Image (cartoon, one colour):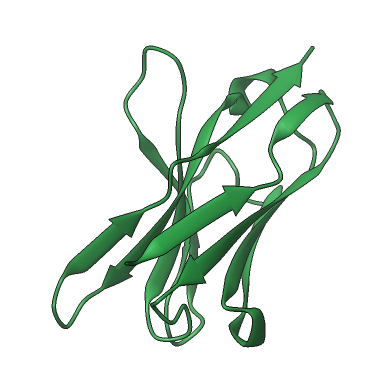
Length: 117
């Protein structure tokens, strides 16, 4: 069974940093488009960042210059380094794995990030 397990969330003050991790089981992160999405209370889930199998990255405008997505193929893990956090970054962050050839799409259960002002 495919699993994506996120970790690294928590409570941090504005201006602080966190690093989220997403460990994948039964799929390879190296060939998939891996992404981080977030959902704040009362809002729709939104894209934060993605990294393709070829290593190309894409970021939401709201996090450009502050967040960095990366991947460790040996550990089958994707990371999201979040710096200069703002209260508006507060949300549940979800890991996503998408494989374009067959359109398979998997989600983790999420990890909560709370940024206090």
